[in-house]
Amino acid sequence: MPREKIPRQQMPEQEADVRRHNFKEVPFGFTPELAQREASRCLFCKKPKCVAGCPVNIDIPAFIRLIKEGDFDGAAKKLKEENALPAICGRVCPQEEQCEIVCVTGIKDEPVAIGRLERFAADYERDNNLVTIPKKAPATGKKAAIVGCGPAGLTVAGELAKLGHDVTIYEALHQPGGVLMYGIPEFRLPKAIVNAEVDYVKKLGVEIIYNAVIGRYLTVDELQGQYDSIFLGTGAGLPYFMNIPGENLNGVYSANEYLTRSNLMRAYLFPEYDTPVVQSKKVAVLGGGNVAMDSARTALRLGAEEVNIIYRRSRKEMPARIEEVHHAEEEGVVMQLLTNPTELLGDEEGWVKGMRCIRMELGEPDASGRRRPVPIEGSEFEIEVDTVVVSIGNGANPLIPQTTEGLDTNKWGNIIADDQTCVTSKPGVYAGGDIVIGAATVILAMGAGKQASQAMHRYMMGIPEPEPEPKDDKKDDKK
Image 1 (tube, rainbow, N blue to C red):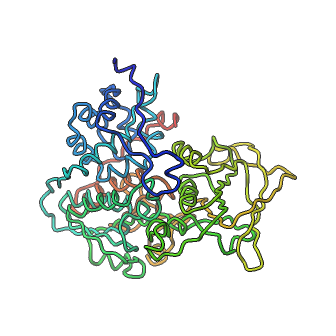
Image 2 (image 1 turned 90 degrees about the vertical axis):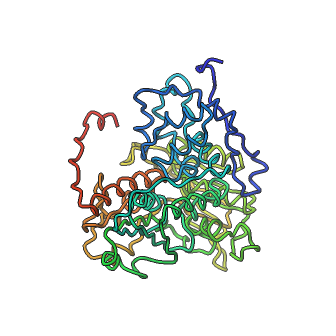
């Protein structure tokens, strides 16, 4: 069959009525035959736009060509030249907004399934025990401390270790991975995958110290006395609430707590794991992002009879990935769109029992570019709930800025860092990921990690910073 006649290949997955009752991963992944068939759709452009669309600059045509040729292990090795966590990125990165959106194949047809091919190659390498550790540069004698073992921190650590530096990660929790471990559910990102990717970074020589809350265990200033450079990758773990009446009732959770109990503390395996988790019948999740979808789908798997997503805009404005919304609806999650909660109602014992809402309509665009939701007068109504999960975003944890003199932050509490080098107001201290840009994607955090690692290497080795790239005004205009 000619290449242009081959449709985009679909991944086999669990049926919706089966998967809503278990925590096993939903898609099964490509078979070798499907992967090669999908890879054959690539045009292997001489000037590939997909590479520019990737925050970590993977040589996408090169790894896809290797899959097409049947060299699956070579494809995985090619991926790992730029990305230490390909099995994770292949599962949770929004390729449809980055590399795939600029795929030339997508002009007349659907774009090449770059993310699914990335997942396939990484899984093939791991499942066939083909993971090898690349040759590292000679030891430099320099030491770097990484604060936070999430995607940004793991990326910095891996890159610096390959450059010959002695790297230590300080992690506040008792397991590695950050949001990969506590925030993303098992059915979307199996924890065995996260552990395998972390093991790869550890085999590069990176040490991880757990239960170490920087700002309490040690301060950043104290770390500076022990290390040649420091990277702050603590993420955005401070949950936002709506500040509406009744939000302090029992049965109201932040998405952070709800997902952490289920993921990191294995509440979904209670009583095998002794972590209490609320037994819900009617759940409302407030928000329209990926975390809201994760919370809603988790509630179903924990036994809820009815789960509603309450979102104040329309489906078009939902920030969640289309695939995640599709999976949630297939599993039975109800989308209450153009709806805004105004009050949570409680019983005499202080438990949430209902929610008062109002219908909305869309007005003019706001600062985010999305149309502003406007209440419709007289459209109030109530719904019955026994659990509410608030998933409207997260902010920066203030602990490190509060305990670090001379570390500049913006009005939202995010650490201010240079766009190109990730250096902060404190020389030798770098920051990247959600702690700088606010809650965003795994791959953007990793992109910042790669930038920071190069800048930290230059700083520790006394290499001058290159001249900043000139700003492309035409490119900015297109954005």
